[in-house]
Structures are given as structure tokens and as C-alpha cells.
Length: 122
Image (cartoon, rainbow, N blue to C red; front, side, top):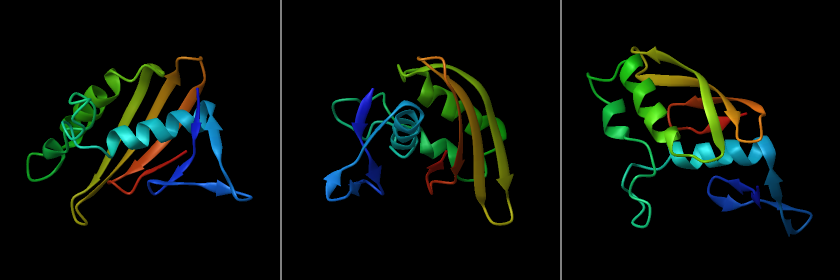
């Protein structure tokens, strides 16, 4: 699939034109949007998003965060399978980093790092 490139929610420009992305970059952007959206936030897609309430507070642990992310990605049609969700919590700084390894519907392996709401870096 081909779509517009976004940077911090805004259209990204290249030489004065809207930049386009596809393949791994497009999947990374779709996952970034999905994980950055609170579950139920979009009226027309109430099942899209991440149950962020489960990821904060004392109840947040690696397994809870992993499960919330897996549930969020389960309905993404561009993901064939999720091979690994590795969660690293830093309780001192109260941050989390998640490493995702997935296979796209086109058979490409995609590895992403999600760092505590700051976004995904491919």
C-alpha cells in the first residue's frame, strides 16, 4: 500500500511535494498511528488503538504491556504475524521501550522500536 508520509502528525514534504511511502515505512507509520491512538478514540473505528490505561500505574508490567500491544496489532490487516514483542521497563525513570518484530502481509520482516509514546523508529 502507498500513502502519504507523516512526521509528528503533519504531512511530510519533499522538494515542495507531499512525500509518499510504501512497504516497510508504510507499515511502520500505520503501527505508530495505531499505538499512538487511545483505544476507542476514533468514533468510526472504536476498536482501533492501544489500551493505554493498562500501560500506566503500578499494574503496568512487561506482560500487561505486551498483551495490550498484541491486542492492538491483532486487527491490522497489513500484519501477517507478530514474531516478537520485547518489553523493557525502567521503573526508575518510569519509561518503557518495546521492540516489535513482525511479518507484513507481503512477507517482509519489519523490526520497530516503540519508546514510551515517543514514537516508532524503524
